[in-house]
Image (cartoon, rainbow, N blue to C red; front, side, top):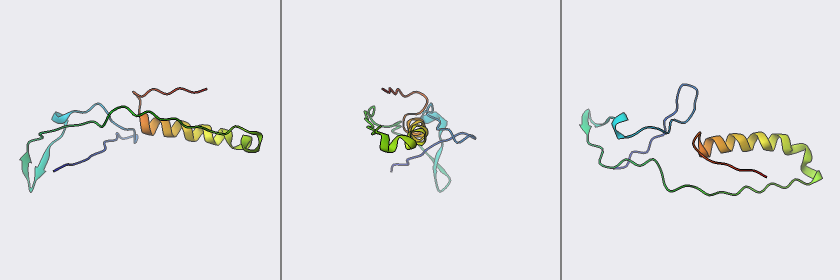
Length: 84
């Protein structure tokens, strides 16, 4: 059985430095042995292309804020991001 979990701290920030010993899984109160622990798949490569023409120039500040939120949510504190 797979039991996917997401752990956040009291500030709602993703906690990504956990391992199997940080969890206790039970079935009807009976402790179960964790046989596989996986923090996710291979690294994600992603390109976000944003038009910067004059017709959307007024939207750029909000798009920038959204990009920061997206980057933090998807990549977390250990991820890498670059911009032009």
